[in-house]
Length: 411
Image (tube, rainbow, N blue to C red; front, top):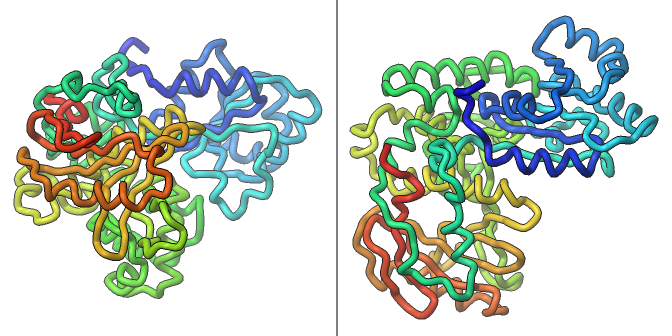
């Protein structure tokens, strides 16, 4: 166990175990859910529904798996009706921390889940590693928290060289992060995709054509960081709109994609309502899009969207560590003004615009200014930030240009 990377998310699970009898940890396969839960003290009895014998027992006589407490039940999405047995066990004897359930699917989005364990469970989603967490940097997300402080000083912002193409290709799955060779890592992602299609996907829903589904995955990867237009996606995939819609829902249920919702600053305004599509793991998205090396990335016209996808790896970790306090949005109006990400914490907003280059001009703040003007409650916006590859400097009142290098540090 000495080589196991500690997860910042462990504190979330430990807090949940002190309060509620059931803690449900979901996330894409290979994010480290099993490792995380088995590291929690005291030790718990562990059953995985990937074991055929345990799976049969969960389907035929689930109560027997719950007789020993505390217990971990792994991959519970395989038998959604198991939640009813957990509910009975909790109601018969309620005790905080008795049950940890894990799954490679968001149980709240699964149509076959008939009980959400309301009042008995808390749902936690474990994201892949972000670069700073993988490098075990203590308090590494402090710069993002400091953006909400009234006395924020741009001169205190962390500056160091960044290498986002490397982190894009590595992603955040532990097995992939441990592979140095781009060729070998490409083989790992290919195997991951094949396993998802042939095994995990079939556990969620009947899909008549795996090639069609894989085509949707590849097309969705090409649209990362962009507004999701399902009509265009279904047309390019040569599928009906309802089928494309269902396939996207399955990707979201499997914790592979995230639809970032727009922030509605003015309900009566002409705002774009379509969500922005991002993948929970940038390495997987790059593999699906055919980006196998830094050379492949240099020839693409959409490199800015891939930088956004790579930095999202850190932003989603920041959100996941305080999900009750923090939210993540974007903003765009029909005039074309946009802000890449809006961080929300305790009702306060920080607007982030992301640029790949090192030169920032006043035109790069156009979206930030439009967003500020659209707010009815101006005090809710703490500041605007242009994250770029250059040096930190002030741009306007409560607007600064800050480097993103620390979010993707050189290895």
